[in-house]
Length: 351
Ligand code: NDP
Image (cartoon, rainbow, N blue to C red):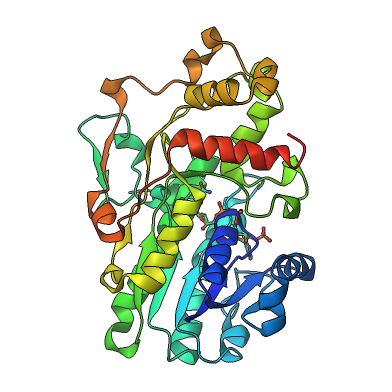
């Protein structure tokens, strides 16, 4: 049994990490922003909450230099930290305070707190993103190969280019800050760092009843919720895939965190680029139409799907995540399995 701190336990990805950690018998302290969210998590795991194998703590705001100090000081024996909490939404007016500050300060505050107060921590896993790998300007060239070695060249000067760019900037700067921290601390710290860099994550909600209905669905599943509500048949039509047309299932991302944090010592110092491959919005629509005939009426017809197809070959980047696959040995779920399970979970909350 390992004692793990998992930040952002109410999140889409973190809820699956928590589920997998508890199922494997580990002891978990997880953080959320409110008592209401804490109570729901405790109710979902009554025996572990009662035994103390699950502790849910409140950390209300990431964008504070001392955000994690008290919690980590008061939690002896931590061995592994999985830092997933970071804003992923587009409901903001100021991307600096809404995205970049919590992403970066949340990451540096937890690293400082571990270095100061948690001498038994041996590994920290930070949830980064393909957003920290992608180069928007090179993404339409087949000469581009994104891999674990690629870094998004975006800088703070690009913050107002688009909401998506601002999010990518927040992830790039946060990941960069984490690598800078461990490099600068050198031998002064006893833990190493791993980052997990997933692209678009689909998959079922671990606790659909926790999100407060379809409007509360996490950002990366919103397009599927919108498809099921008939949104793709209305005004905006079938969304274009843009440059984010690689994906991975949430349960495989969660498994990657557990492996990287607890099971694969050689992951130390590595960026892990987990992806199951390509998808297009047209494919999502076809899977829903085929597997959920009761929703077929709400799915655009074949002639309308052209806008949601993959870009043509000559405008696609390539990617190579073979180093990650070799290290983790994950067998990724298929797109159809993932989307079917996503839809099933969204149907429980009104889709
Ligand atoms: P969610 O929005 O479901 O989870 C985000 C988590 O961060 C939630 O627990 C949220 O708390 C917490 N959080 C956000 N902002 C703050 C803040 N200012 N202070 C405290 N806590 C905060 O998204 P995901 O599960 O999808 O994302 C988890 C991580 O994975 C993020 O780091 C994201 O960037 C990364 N990622 C996600 C991808 C995806 O496609 N889903 C792809 C690649 C990376 P609350 O529940 O209270 O809102």
